[in-house]
Structures are given as structure tokens and as C-alpha cells.
Length: 374
Ligand code: ZN
Ligand code: ZN
Ligand code: ZN
Image (cartoon, rainbow, N blue to C red):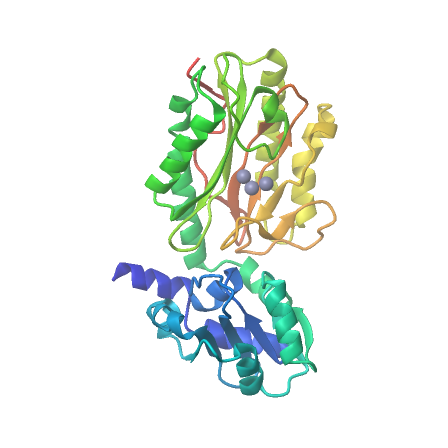
């Protein structure tokens, strides 16, 4: 099946060995990964996060194993993890799965825990492995996850294409008299129809709400002359995420808005043009910020320029002042400057990938100010 081939490319069988070697190189004896993006990255298994312990154990030396509740064993075997060289160890309702992990792992001095592991499990693992120093698995996985493989970039491109198709429909839904919430419901439905497995967020921030970067959607009724910030995204069946913002106008927007929208568009363009290997993440942030500051709107650009994206909507690398890490080919992230002076605001967001010599733009939907339903 084509689906299986895609999964094999996204979640290659040798990743377990690479992760084990990287854990050893980082001075860890094992990685312990509970359900979430770290476990999915290493095995392809989209395990449910439950109070019963599911835990992938990847020793730096030795065979990896996946501890799962007995009732989850069929699902684990049916997942891409079932095709890996990985023992699946079921535990019964009366077993102590933490003791099981400790017994099989033996005496260890340091373990890396999935960044999103529940505190419940962190503390029980600490009790079961009292001699083990606990660190974050991201010490090992951060750089690997940040540098996307060609298959991961293809998965992000498919996600971007899907969300672009949703944005292409948004102007038709932005009509005076409708509420933000009604528009958000149309968008969430379209995110699924475009091929996502889940609709993760649909920000529809109209008029004064547009001046609040993380406003979601309310019962405010759209009015002629509104500027509307629409920031939407979902997760594809592959596990990879989309995230794209466009700002629309209903009828003719206020003159002040039209003026800074152009500044914003130029700034977003400048940041995309700054992307290439070796350039620091903070230099991309500066490339977006300088033209906005020069035009007098600097105090209204109140957030970082972007975030990495992959199996999580927000992950490394962060495009923010103070992050001096140089961009590398395969880094995938958003470029999303905003200007929020009130009583309206604007943001433009695209996902890009740093290539061997520049910037690959995944979102293709127009960045021109689109006047909708006025
Ligand atoms: Zn955000
Ligand atoms: Zn974003
Ligand atoms: Zn966004």
C-alpha cells in the first residue's frame, strides 16, 4: 500500500539505532519515551496517552523494547512500530509496569525522558530507577527532529498544500453579519475536508480582536470595514502539521490598516529572503523586525517571528532574538511577523524550509490583501 511506503519513508527502520547511538554519545544509558511526538518520531507509533504506561525503552547499548498495556498490544503491532526490530512487551492489569521497565533495563546512571511525559510517569520512573539521573530526551532528539528528512519535508508540503486550499475558500465565508465562531466552524470542517486528520486551531480575529495575537474566535459579528486575522492549522494523517495565517479585509479597510499591511508584507518577504544555511535564527527575526521598526510600528510587533514545525505545531528551532543557532538545511519553521496597533491588527504566516542554499516556501496562497464579502 502507498500509505505503508509513505510511513516507511517518514519513520525509517534505522532510526531506532541512530537514536540509541545518539543517546550513548550524549552520555545517557537509555531513552524512555511515552506517547507523544518523540515516540512517534522514533517508531511511527501514534500511541494513545493513557494512565496505563506505554513506554519505548531505547538503551544506548542493547535491544530496544516497547512496554504496552496488554489491551494495547494489537494496536502497537498494527502500527509502524510492529514492523521494526523491536520487542513488544505486554503487561497485565495487576503487573507493575514501572518495575518491569526497571528490571529489564538493569542498573542505569542516566535516562532521557520524553519532553511531554506526564509528571505521574516521571515520578514513578524516578522511584523505580532511583539511581538514574533524569534528563530530557530532547538533549538527544532535538537536533534530529529539527533537521527534516526529504520525506518529512514532503509531508510538510502536503500539509501546507492542504491548508492553502482552506485559505482559498476563506474569503467566501467572511461576510458581514456572520460571527467569528460561524466562520471558524466552516474553517474547521474544511481543514478536515482538505485531508487533515485533525483540525487543531482556527483563529478568526476580526476588527479590534485582530489586535490580540492569540484571540481565538468569539460571537463578534463581522462588519464592513473589518480587517480579519485568520490563523489556521491541523495535523495530517502522516503526523505532520500545517499552520498558515492570512489577514483579510471585509470591504475597504481603514486607511491606517492598509498602510501597515504593506509594511508587514514587505517585512515578511525580507525575513523569507534572509533564510539560508549558516544565518542565525535571530538574524531572520531581525530581518522581519527592522522594516517594521523603521516604519514606526516596532512596538506593535509583540511576538517572535516564528517557530519550528513538524510533528508538533511549535517545536525547535525558534526564530527569536537571542537564538544564535545557525540555520541548517532541513530546518522547517514559520515566518509570521504581525503588527497589532489596535483597533485592528495583521499577521502573515508561511512555513518555509532552509535548503542547501536558500529558502523553500511551502505555502503558496497569495499574500496580497484580499478583500472579501464586502
Ligand atoms: Zn502562535
Ligand atoms: Zn505559527
Ligand atoms: Zn499560526
